[in-house]
Amino acid sequence: MMIWFLKNYGSRGFTLMELMVAIAIFATIAAGVAVPIISSHLSSLGDRQAFQASTMLTESWEAVRSIRNRDWAELLEGDHGLSLVGGQWVMTGNSDIEDGITRVVTLATSERDTQGNLVDVGGANDPDTKKVTLSLSWQPPYSSLRTIVAESLLTNHKNPGAWPIPIPPVPIP
Image (tube, rainbow, N blue to C red):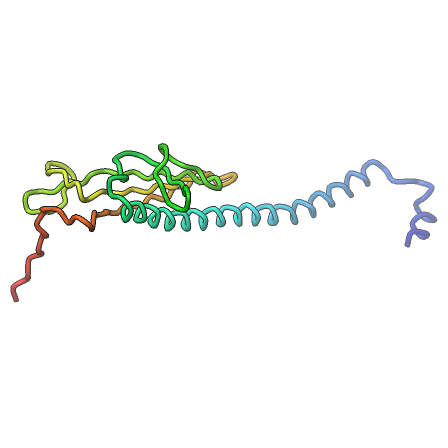
């Protein structure tokens, strides 16, 4: 093939136009192959971070419960991070960052009305019930900020408190 080429075209050589056409064809093929590969990689990275955040959310709930079981008094109101120190979870700072994921644990004292029902405002503080909000956020490459927020109540099961337990009404047939 090369000998035929040199015999027929060797004397004239490549023109600049032929070279540009060859480069354009190569660039088109390379882009057609590179774009899906890069897109797949970025998508995979974003999926991996979402999975890590989901795992971190479960870990965070277990950490907060572990702190509650050890000492209810360690659950102070405000924003906190979590850290594993000497094999035990502890609240640290306002947040913590692990593998590019920022975690914020927000603790707030809950309020109850005179019947013992939880209310957002207008009740008395229940020192044995905390509202826990976990917020995890991360920035995937070439994408907008992602956030997971989960809320739950946490009670001091060692001290049930003086609040009456609300009994739901029984429907009359």
